[in-house]
Length: 274
Length: 310
Image (cartoon, rainbow over all chains, first blue to last red; front, side, top):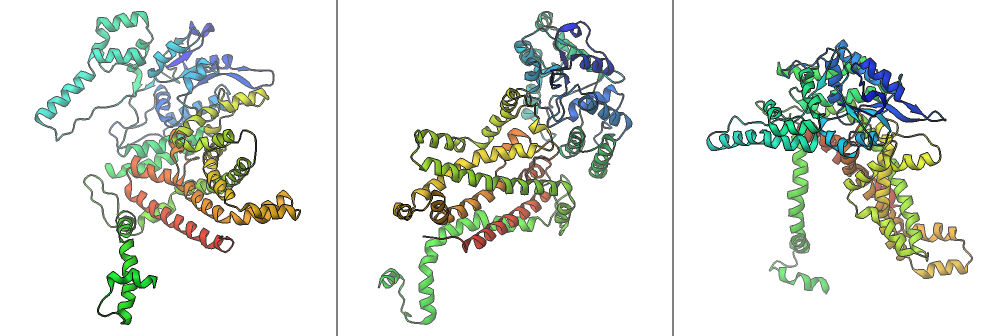
């Protein structure tokens, strides 16, 4: 979710990556000595940069995995191009603070006027609505070629060994926790997307959205979203992907060799699972 | 006489026989030590030896049970560039944090040992970091280091310095961690130095004053030689700490970005409990045990010749 500071951007948020870059340039403010006092944009990257990055890849018409967990495509031209565009924000374009950027400090940087726009999790919506000391807005993630977004969240796993009372109790619990009543409370408190579509049809949710419409943008963006990176031995493979993105963002490696190297390392792990 | 009394309960009809007298000599201390020997064997030595044994096997995964791999885990370790990177980080971390925290601790101990006004307050403030859990210290420093509005950038901006991104750049992140460690550990070592300084007999210094020795001469010729056992003790503890204290990494950087702040034990933890590659983690554990044993024993041998025990 990019959120923006007021001015004219509130009325016309960027729809494409190029528009975003153009606005970010206009919103990057420097003082007399040339030090940047307000960056145009901030895309947090600490720990798991691959998550928001996969949204940029989907917006570039690319894919990161085959959906079966047995292959990744992170050395594809769409991924490498997306990474080049992301890194350019803090290098050649100078509209984003260089280096790795913390998630936790991102809303704070927005409130303090250190960044004019930010990409962050929908789970920050309520936080921003309560704490931003100015008028602000929400828009879908601007894509390089098309709309695109990552998806997040957690999963409930049902063990195949469950049976009888245990199984029905587990199913009851999963139904209960994802039911509209619980989801609405969750969405109100955080801004997160409710997992079931029916929740958005309830009177309570409609009343909430009539008052605070921004959460619906994230829900509507889901049609352009792609799945989160997920393969066999996921902690290891996604770790390789994350570290490779970090190496590029830190300026230690170039996008193409870093992604090719990471793809080869992941291939080495996944070949046993095909 | 004393010995005969203590051995009395173990006296045997074969008393006087050479073998038996040896047996009688060793049995009581052995019996007295046996509870701790049993505990140490059960919880330290046997698991350590078992770890070495396990390091020759592969990680069991789902359908595939563990199988003998010989030295393959160690070969993987040698071929792993990340392992060398984190080992290098750890060496830099150790050779900067240890001397720095020892020197600062000694200066602080000298300060709070002298008759300064507000001494209790100074002692308290120097000791404060010690009582904080390292993971909380990490969180505090995370806010100090925040780019733009963290304490360091706020102070820097008063002097017109540019903003920093200490934990977000490969050149500076390890130094950020080193700083936290020095801040945290110095107060702890200060306590040992303070005890050692207070144990130095006052008449030695008074005699030196009468002879016309300067403060520096007193420190160099009297204080320093008399606290060398403490320096040895602290340097052993500090070396071990440099390899085993990693809690701040969890709250600050998770070893990142791109392993630039990862230390050996953190990488070991990641392999064991994030990647679940337990066999590889075990091989690294063996490496760590051997490394620490060599450093620990080496330090004691090397410094023993220069240490003056009173």
